[in-house]
Image 1 (spheres, rainbow, N blue to C red):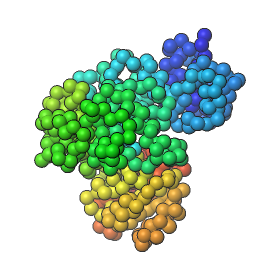
Image 2 (cartoon, rainbow, N blue to C red; image 1 turned 180 degrees about the vertical axis):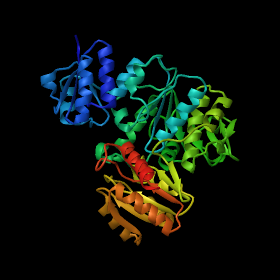
Image 3 (cartoon, rainbow, N blue to C red; image 1 turned 120 degrees about the vertical axis):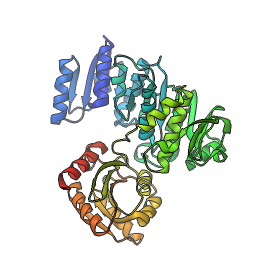
Length: 454
């Protein structure tokens, strides 16, 4: 029996191991950790006939698998993976494994630095309203290999792909691919902006129908100047009207007088979406364009958008307390996303920021803080660096509070004192200093809001 090896327990890795077992492989899964949670997962996997190694570093020479499947969080260039490839071991990510199982299904693939989760959720909602089995998966919803094992099988696969997942998925060929934004992020992993760009571009280059955010400065420059294979039938979008489109305007998607048009066809009112911000109008426009090219009727598109509840951890209204809205934007894990979140607030805001810091250009975020933030409460490892940066731009209304438990009640107190209408968690940082992921961070904010604000 052929031997497959999966690196990384967790949602993606566990699903990959189960899919491989279902396909008749002898499967081993390993993880460097050995926590109680991993022990619990291990027991379930062992009961299904899957070998588990905890507290273990993968050794390709000793394990000798025919196939190696890597979870998204494992860097593609770690020595053990490079050694495995030198030894001729077929090495792929869990998304590639799912693609091989779902290759006969049409895929809508969404990538980008920011906006991809909201865009994916909107796209899935539209396709589902049209009656399709169209689960959202990848960086959102299900693990990819969970969808590959699902019954019934999907009519459309709605996949959110990070650069990490694209890096380990060399053959995914979407029917439709969307690129939402491109700004600096994940440079600790990809080293340079050209490397990071190339990861995204690989996916779009293989797509039958490309959809690009034409209002994003970096993507617009690519469209105007070339740089990778943009198809002749590519759809460029703009929320600022048809005159702002690049590429073939008769293939474009745009908003004019609050109406969304795709290929000059009037689809629906943009104001149907009840989420704030121009960035969400752009997400909506791209999702509607994807649905149009898939043949979804206009009335189904409008029905889905009218009922769309928003996305957890992305400008998610948690509660209103004493007239103050508490908003969870935990998914804002870089400066650009945090700037978009803060700029979307319609009045004075108490901002909670900080976590595990990232490289990037913070100038636009700092400008939005000066314009919108009545106070900034800093938490996590990046707090001292952020404090120094705020002081350097002449902003003095900040406090270092270390934890979310300290920040939420203080934010409520300051909001009342300063007559601020919003308390916004929008960290501009990864979560790994204090939390397992951004979801856990957002859930902590939600629970504290519910417990403290009485």
